[in-house]
Length: 377
Image (cartoon, rainbow, N blue to C red; front, side, top):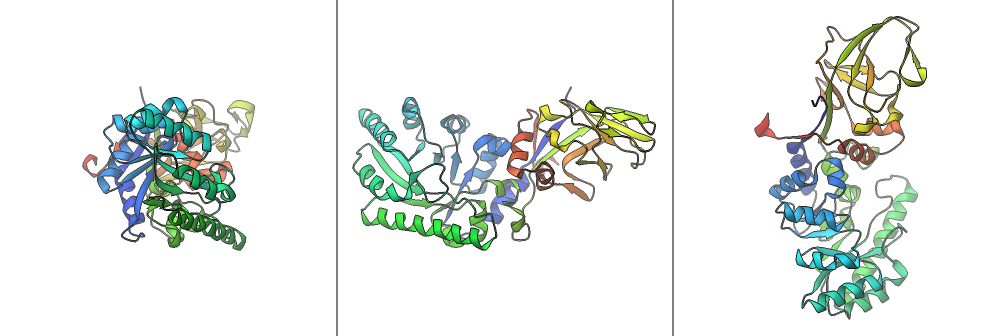
């Protein structure tokens, strides 16, 4: 029995892709970031729809994800953003996967393996311009490019970096973003000076795609915006995005509880009046955070109702006293639209003290997904 499901609106996904595409100059292409199961949205189905909308490139975090896409018939260029292990070089070469390099020994090992096989490995060099997470440090990047140019088993076809605060609006953060961009342009210029045949430079994430056109280069790498999530609250008025993910379930039990009764583990919620309590079969096992206990809301018959008591592993309780004719079997929306109201990923994230990315990834771990488009309505 499956009362609970994640709905993925592929038409909303397509809308977001095309809205973002309209912000680009004609020569700039989109590398759709579909890592982590497309932020919980279902990597294969998402990639297939984005490919049909014109996405030319895909970005994943690990080689295994790239191979899943290949097995699903996605023949587009795929970049593995984290790089690969030496044991994975053969599979990457065999399936034409583009590899990220940022360490000298990594680049040499890939080159040697490719030469043994009579091939060239296509690689993108990642430069760290200030994120201090992954990539060749900016100060070492010029020497690194000199060295990879001499590796005969590599075809260096891309160069990229990543912004750390492009989604923030303070003057200091804007200055830092432009400082990162300036550093990246320095490395771009150097790569051209030494004659590296790089065809694709890229740095723009969702935030920079929307707000920093000078960072678009030949590729942009939207992630969260494809899925209808805003990079931060500063972007809600800047672009028309449609949420792609919904979490829906139904009421499986109703019970009238007198005033003064406690609900749930820890007796953390006490009724202040006679209360009609609905039980729904969702919990933190489904990715719905325990931090939302007695803090969040759901939609029932188009009305907002509060979550009361603790979110447990498989159940949540709602106060549906104000919902006329609430019944067992009624649809409950915990994320998404019902009637004229909507609960967004941003709303849930704020109540958890986190970001919409984490909300989507956690909820997307739910195995039951339903993919809908105009042909299914």
